[in-house]
Image (cartoon, rainbow, N blue to C red):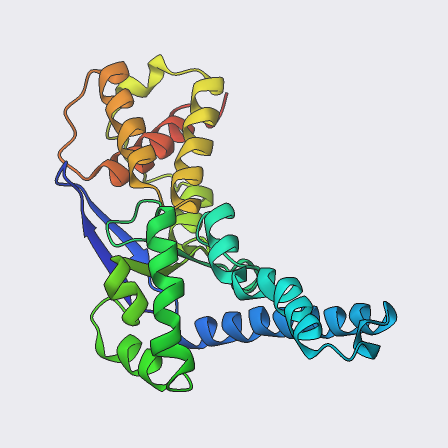
Length: 242
């Protein structure tokens, strides 16, 4: 899986997994299956209400358009209220974020939605797929216009293994100052660390790292995420037999 590398204003490098083309296509298919099901439901409701018996075609068409408005705005509304995810994206564990890895805003979701007319519907998806394949950060036209990218929210297996791995007898403690921490502190650090990766939010990990630097009074010569990981392992090794 390709990586989206972010260099933050604090000069912290953070890495995301780009959403694969296949997962994006499946998410799109799920979303539009939902939209089609909604449209069929609308037709059944209109039929049951007897509006199709009217001879006024303007009334019938107007009723359809009114009831289908939620379907038309579905991608934009879902991404806005569910922080970059539609039902398809939730199922496929992918989401839309700003190109710097932070949460996108309503304006950016709107730009992506408007541009889908060009790169998805007018070309039967060919332009959007070509753009995703050709661009460095796997962006379709809507992403390029909105300055967004689509990332995977699946937890990084390597990170999970690092957090839960057994520490060998040969392990050397890097920061003996972890003795200042309590079990409660260690558990909070671990949970916040995992949450930062799950949310793909480097600010959480950076803030956690800065707090640990103050608490332990150390000057780590490593990236914030590496520092936090080492502190967690140091703590559990130091108190493994307690």
